[in-house]
Length: 412
Ligand code: UDP
Image 1 (tube, rainbow, N blue to C red):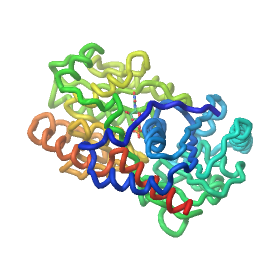
Image 2: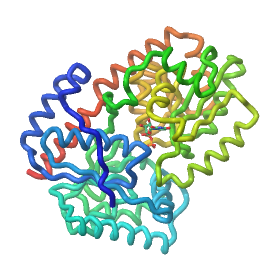
Image 3: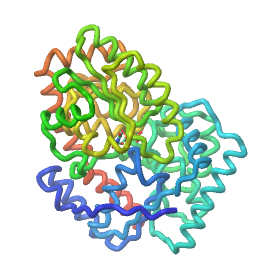
């Protein structure tokens, strides 16, 4: 296991950005938890939504007085390939790990616990994130842990759910991003619904004007005088990049100058199948020089992601499964009009027709793209409504407050 270092964060920095009531709630509950030793564990220190959340949540917990650390698994190819299978199958994928693979997954989790023990790491409360590290609590002999399931488990692969079920029962609580992921009556333990959040103070979300963003995109080869639509995401089948390309092709018949950008820097060490999806997508889009696919982490950093989210004429997140979809909240925070797949956490974030559009297929998506490009006033008012919705519900201090409420409930 590796101890992950994070930048310092201050709760005080959020005054004037999030509702004051949330900040005073945090201060009040944190007072009762001062000195509590809390450890977060996940599979990877970099890449994807969980790492994104922890790099803000961990230093904020520290700032309000909890002794908080974050440990991540050390990269290991065979482990990540198995855990990726589990991750996909919890979202409904058909593959099931072999008995040998499952044994390897258990052994890796046990090894990780031994590594923590050898470092002398202890906690009053463990927050264990996602299926990759779910068995760890069972090897710790601890009875005070919370498992956070960040994926969309509306229709899980039943065989895999059964394999993981005994590990879920070890936890005091499960955190799900949406109520429908663990419907009442069939749960291993009590479920608490806490949707994730974004951090407006991260450099990636620093305010950037439309024209600054267009300049940065131009530097990457986009034509800043023609309309641009984009999807910022890992290359993953549930993000439906092929559906995005299909929607773009249909919309381009009405808007001939249209360009499409896929932005997905390949940084997550556990994303072994992203390379295959990327290769397939490159083949699928080969015939069109107005489709730009960015995957090189040397080219795509926070500044570039910010630029695509702040300067695209329409932002897409056309997923078919999505635990939450931080990218949705991120684009809304930047006041961009957004079209999201009608699934999981996206359905909860977007009020259809008000803070964005929800779509079920590429042709509906194309229709909405054309509507937004032809009606800039509609696009603008959606962008504004989206930002206010994120301010009230999906910014980091709210997530901090909800974790602290849960901690207070468990340790008292
Ligand atoms: N992201 C990024 N660079 C990229 C693509 C994505 O920094 O090239 C970030 C994105 O801004 C978001 C996170 O990765 O913060 C993805 O989280 P989300 O919940 O949308 O999806 P996940 O990858 O967890 O399925």
